[in-house]
Every structure is written in C-alpha cells, then in structure tokens.
Length: 378
Image 1: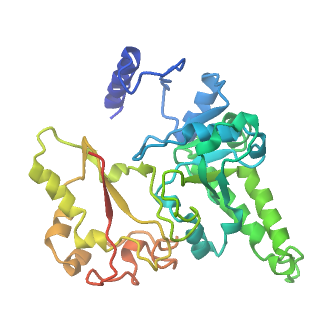
Image 2: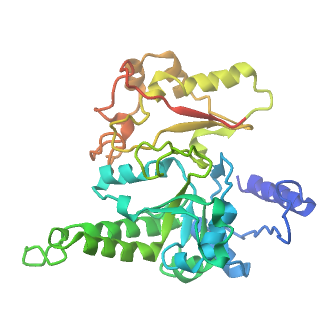
Image 3: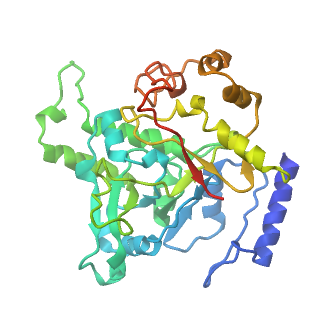
C-alpha cells in the first residue's frame, strides 16, 4: 500500500509539473505538492502545510480528499467579497458548502436537540454594502449557523486556522479536527441554552426559563461567534418564489458529496454495461431503500449515492445476497454487531441502535417509503 501511494504521488507530481488540467493554476496562482516523510493524519498534515508553505492569502480552502463537488459554485467570488466586508469579520470565519449532513439543517437540529436556529440564520441579499463589497449584487442566500464543527470542504479565513483551530489543541498523529472541535462546539452550544443547576441542586440564574429570549440569543451568538462556522444556501439561481433557505419546505441540494472508501473501488477497465447495471440494481434494491430517512425520521437529510466515472460499487457476496434474497432472509444474514451502538439512531432518535437496525423503520411495502437518491455524475 505504501509503495502504491508513493507511485501515486509521483504521478501527481508529474501532472503538476506538466500543468495537466485540472493542475494548471490560473492567473498568478501556483500548485505545490507537499510530501510528508511519514503518516501524519489530516489534522497534523493541515498544520504542517500552514507551517511550511508560508501561506499569505487571506483565505484558504480546506478540501477533504473524499469530498468532491457535484454542482457548480457560482457564488464563490461573491462570498469572498462578502467576507472582505467589515460587517462580517466579527461573526463569519468559515463557510461550508451544503452536503447531505447539512441539508434542512434548521428543522434537523430542532428535532434532534430542541434548539431552534431560525432566529440565528442570516438571510442576505446584497444591497447598499460598503465599497469593498460592491460586487455582491448577485449574492442572494442564507447563512445557517452550524452547531458542530464539520471536517468537510470549506472556505475559511487564514487567521481562523493559524490563530485558533491549529493552536488550541496539541495535535497527534491520526487526529481529525472534526473530532477535536466538533464535540467541543456542540457541548458549548447546548450548554449555553440548557438548564443548569448549582451544587445545591437548585436551578441557577443561568436557567433559560428565567431569562429573556434576548439573553438566550445573546449567549448563543457569543458562543457561536467564537467558531463562526456557517453553511451557505444560495437562492440566486432559484425561482423568485422560492422561500428562504431556512424554510422547512425549501428544496435544498448538495454541493459536495462525501465518498466513502468502504463503498467504492476503482472500476475495472473491462466493466461491461451489464456490470454497471448490476451495481446500480444492488443499490436500488429494497434492502438499501429501507434505510433511507423517512419524512418523520429523526434526521431530515436524505440519503444519496453517486455514480462516478472510474469508480464502482464493490461486488461483494453480501451485496449479491441482498439483491437475490428477500428482506427477511437478508436480515438473518446480517452479523450481530460486536459492540453496542451508543449514539442516537438517525431514524427514530433513540439511543442503543443504528438506523440500519431501527425497529421503527417502515417496511418496504409502505407507500411512504422513500428511496435512496442516485446522483449520476457520469
């Protein structure tokens, strides 16, 4: 595996030297491959890049190797212009592109944590801004605050990383920034709006039931401004009648897609059309559709699969069994989990089982059964 990875890096370096698209920088840009002598893990690798590359740009894009864009981003320059504006510097540090995890984020968080983010969303339509942001006439959308620090592809201020993200924790090999910052942010956000008790068991003055909504909102903004992470939903290319992006009924789409290495492999050169259809049928089988989130499920993000040129679904024995056997027979073939699932089920919200083993999941014959969406990127 290590030899193959070095060959891959050599091949990548050749493309950079030869400026083979997409490794051909525009304007005065440049591309540099930073080869590390040993495994670092994502967090230390990012920190090493900041330490050794002498980054001088005001903004950086942190791109995950397993995230790729499935829709064009036509508002990138406008977002950067908006971040240049003095009004945004106090609260906007990091902008995420919509992914499955952040679709319909407002109702999702309200259902899961009882936290209503609607008053904290920042709808924006450019009008009369400062001269530094005069090119924002086409920026029309909503900044939705995130309560969890996601390690997804995003744009951030360079100082956000150099002065905060990479400086508050000692980084070890194999660390992920999402694991370090995600739980910390979520805990602080929930604590600022939850009931607290003093040592004698009585509710303290910080109890939200005893404070005004303005106080609760002020505390939330104070905590969240430290992280400053938002996901932006663009309205400019939607119908004029489209409701705001925070609306429950607003049809939102992923911009980036997370590719799971456990669910894909390099396609064989001689893959026939039958094999492609075979893979497609596997992931449209009832056993897979059964796990797609329902309209009444705990999470409102839909489940999606992508058909990507050069990649294919693994043809495993388990997949063949799922395709050929009935649902009841397949369930008997699934191994019993070795460890107890401790998190909340994506479907019902209860702890102790995953969404794949949720007893409240509807049957495949139910009329409201939703299907896994397939994104054809060929």
